Amino acid sequence: MRQAIVLAISLGVAGAVSACGFTPLYGDSGESLGLRRIAVVAQDDRLGYRLREQLEDALGFDRSAPAQHRLTTEVVQNRRPLGRRIDDTATRYELTVRAAWTLAPVSGASPPFTGTETVTVTYAAADQPYAAIAAQQDGEDRAAAELARLIRLDLLQALSSR
Image (cartoon, rainbow, N blue to C red; front, side, top):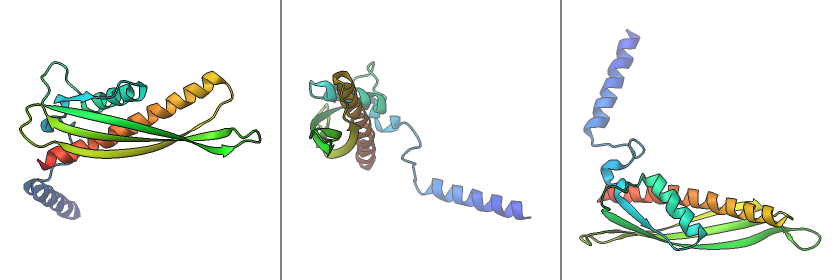
């Protein structure tokens, strides 16, 4: 008897949720919103390239289909030393990356969406030059991946409201 009641309640809740127009944000890849047809334009430097690469992966960009939207990003980074050794060199760095983005339809039919996301990551300062460069690039890569995730969420929200 108890199982029948639980089953009936579950079916009732599922029916109510499906009838209200609820669509889960994470339920699909965003294909129905056209994320696969957003061309990404980024600045011509290492961080811009990494962000474009991460965004294309996050959006599932389809190169075989014509783009419906163009996503333009502008990235600014700021590196700040944290902690000091006895010789006054930094032990860690804090990398803050701010990305301003604009999503505009290729046709120009509707007004563009804009937004800004900021990510802060830290990385260790190394004494060896190669290790220091590798640590900084790893921090940039982590920041680009997180920015791509946040921008994708912004795009899902913006396109679903249209």
